Image 1: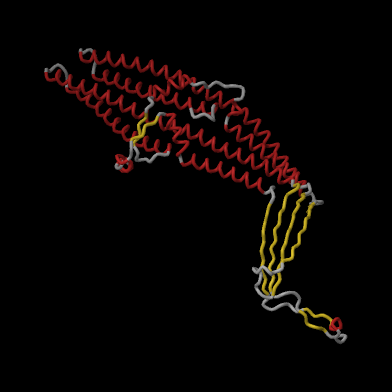
Image 2 (image 1 turned 135 degrees about the vertical axis):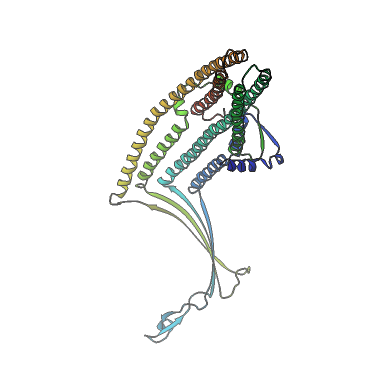
Length: 446
């Protein structure tokens, strides 16, 4: 397993020097992700597709112009039999006659226009709702990206802070070992006390190496999330303290329209609109449709291909017409479809009302989680300060011979645990802050 992780990290870092160093604050990282993350780009394309679909639907109700040119050349003309008496022949006999010229060419121009079509009117509204739904989906993608980028950013800061703390602890332990070895040389302590500190140092070095591996993985995941090559070198300009301070300043209180602003509610509301339009569509199918058209045709006839000559005669014809289609009876099929659409609409209305209550609970829960995280951070800071004092006192006692190596080791373990708990609590505050923020401010980057 360790070899596999090593090979993965090697693939991430071998060519890193070929890329420029990129610096990102958290805000800049989110902005970059919204522009270059693959999922974000796809959501932008989906919105563009919805805009084109809206125009495509609109254009079907605008004037349509079509041209048609046809050319016919009779390889063998059709023969008609005409009573011979029409031409002075005998009664009961027939004369073979070929009507028309051997070649013909026709050019037709048709202009058509919808006058009334209920389904078209509903289609226009549906295209607008479809565009709104696509924008909702894009906004949902953006909120998820904000959370993902923040988590990735925070994980890097967490591992870097861990490494910094571990390095500081290793330095202290090595100084203790060095001092204790001098005491041991004077025969004033036991070898076991040195070995106990060496064992603690070994554990710290192992933890540091593990965090270095996590750091490389965290950077690779961060690059992937914001849309940067995984081999690129990035530098984070915000510290964990900066982000915690920002969360204290940021306003995340519930306002009157907080529920309506959430992206989940907007999606559900547009789903309700789509159900309303489906009901309108089924009702519109009982209405007549009226279309108008103007048709102009020019025809040319010749036994030879002389249609490009100026002497060619062309005969024109034009017609204007209206077409009305009236649905009369569908054996109650339309009625069944209308009732189904009505039932689906009622279900969506109930779902929307239920979702409103769920979102209120979700917002309150997110507020409580953030408040608890902030209080827990205060407690963890107090615990860290206390663990530092205890460890320092035990160090003094140990070198004065008033405490055993076991007692010092216990105090050091308490300190290391308190350090880990404190930075974990900082990351917890950051994650809970962004979770609440994207609920209340889905249209903002921060």
